[in-house]
Amino acid sequence: MSIGLYIQLTYVKDDNMVKKTVIAAVVIIIVIVVVAAGAYAAFGGKNNNSKDDSNKVTFLIQDGQGVYFWINGNGDTVQDAIENAFSGYPSGTLETDAYGGVSDLFGQSSSQDTAGNWTWWIQFTWKDNSWSCNTTGMDEINSKDVSYELILFGEGNMENPSATQAPAGTPTPSDAVVWDGSTSGTVFQIQSESGLYFKINGTGGATLLDTFQNACNKYKIPAEFGESALGPYLDGIFGMVSSQDSLGNWLYWGEYEHDSTGWVYSDNGMADLTSSGNSQYAVMFGDGSGFPTQ
Image (cartoon, rainbow, N blue to C red; front, side, top):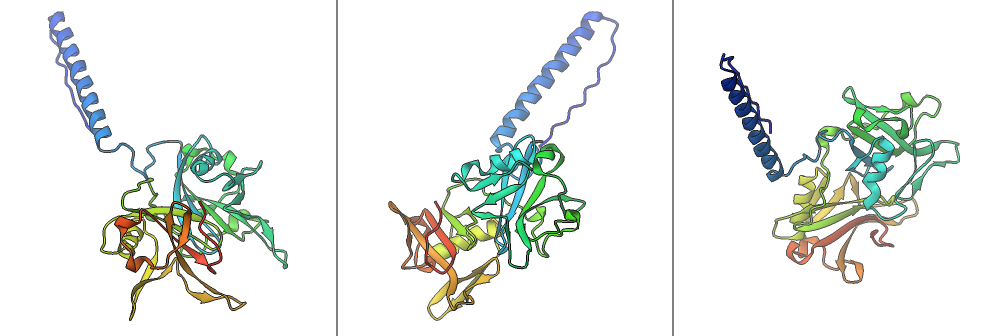
């Protein structure tokens, strides 16, 4: 919201009249500034995705399975900003190195396969309407100079970093929706097989599955839902659906309720639960052998 004011002061020979006119103008400006500040506060202040804070950076975090989420951070450099962004996550979630890189995030760190190919957390900056691979560390990039950064776990070109490209279909800033920490309705935790996890919240719907669908629509999470003889169900998220690995183990989106002891397997499933009775719920892709983080 912006308020403009145009004041024209007419010169009058009477010096006292000129002084009174100038004072009146100053008073009007002060009143309008106060009113504008009140309106700004009343409507919530900063927009979650706008560059109204020169030190704010919005990060797109994406693992090797294609699971991603957006998060905001503040700091003088991009490295300061990402450390600030993850300060609310459990200790050990993020580790940065002395070269301005991410050495470990959600338990995923640089590694080399049997063919000698390296996989690591690659950094990109959004500029000229595309993701451009960084050639310097995050500690050398001022936050005021960028708005969006992509931190992607994958295989890049170590000899020529600038030639590294983001995978086809990687989200762009127009898709950015950051969870604002709201606990209205149900808070859902979505966790990848890699260990990456994030939270969103949703409201409304006759069942918890409806609420989850509302949350996915709100935060632009690509989720698919199906219908069977037993009723509606969650089919997949981020294109990941039930499947068997090379060892014959089934991988699927396990569902978890939350009680006083922590996360427990859901015997019912979202289609048979209501949002009003579940303030927290989690879905985690894997073989069902573990439990969600936190």
